[in-house]
Amino acid sequence: MSFLSPTELNTHLYGEIVNELTRGDNTVAQMAIDAGTAEVKGYLSDYDIVTIFSQTGPNRDPLILLFNKDVAAWHLVCLANPNIDIQLRKDRYDNAIAWLKGVQSGKIVPDLPLVPLPVDNQGNPIIQEGKFRWGGNMKRESHY
Image 1 (spheres, helix red, strand yellow):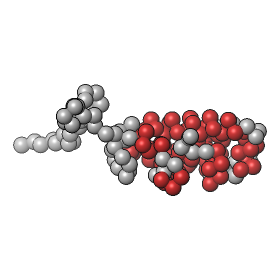
Image 2: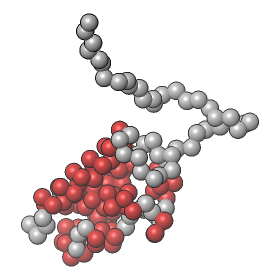
Image 3: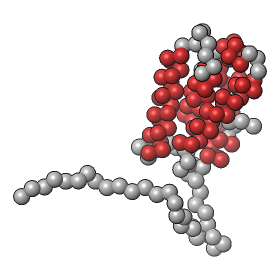
């Protein structure tokens, strides 16, 4: 089951608009939802996306659900229909992506489960190589 269903897009697009865009074919809406969900997951790689996106109903994180709808609605609206306020959809899509980039960079820390650390047979965490962050303070210019 998908994290988001086509009928749940009704908070972002009227049902008759979705029907016009998809010409009554829910697979088109589901493809837009799947593309949007994949895009949102790409920004949340530090978090346990399996747990986050396996939630259903009221157990889903409301912000992730909202931004997933924004991204999915944008992917659906790209089929173009003159009855839709494209600029509003574009602005909401841009806001969702800006928030996701903030999460990805660590400037925004949502209340989401982190990816669990792998452990060995004794229960000790296994140190993984690969993704890491580094940085420092701004260079000071001191002259004497």
